[in-house]
Image (tube, rainbow, N blue to C red; front, side, top):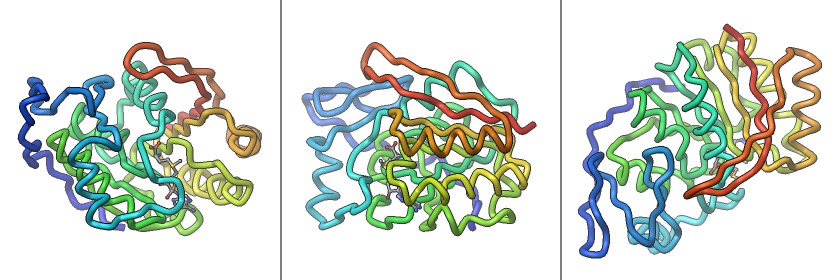
Length: 230
Ligand SMILES: C[S@@+](CC[C@H](N)C(=O)[O-])C[C@H]1O[C@@H](n2cnc3c(N)ncnc32)[C@H](O)[C@@H]1O
């Protein structure tokens, strides 16, 4: 896995007359909402429509920004881990949580997903926020302990949505703990498959299951599996 430095040097796109530029350079307007400082474009945003027009079609649900990512962002903002330089966003989709870490903390972010079609969307969202991350096409079950040696934080938003994902996500967490990853956070809208995975992980390694609620620009409820391994 490449952990080469992600830069925060990309320019945000020029704002259209209907959009306002914020101090961070990101835009706000009706096709984008802001959450904890990051710009989250809707499918109707020009930058997303351009990627879609180019023919990129995610096929394992990486088709939008899922709210579980916002649960994780909110948790990390309120519970900032000491070690946060190297971050892995597993099942990143459009990658907003890693983008938030790059923007807020200057973290070097690896954005990992089995579906290569998500990355053009992630790049568009990252550019809108003036940062970039390192893409990695990989499956949860193929992530090895040695891939995780440098990782300080591993998270994943809504990544355990099928029965077939319970074991792979659990195995990835086992390896992360073995590799010494400091903080692991998996956010979910409380699908039964997530609870099945979380129960097994907590039995094996400890950790906590937290109910989490968001109000404001993003409204969401869900659960977070959090493991502190420092
Ligand atoms: C529901 S989406 C969530 C995306 C993102 N985390 C978010 O919260 O917006 C699930 C993501 O997991 C990815 N995925 C599904 N199975 C995977 C696997 N076995 N290994 C890696 N990624 C996988 C999908 O391609 C998709 O992008």
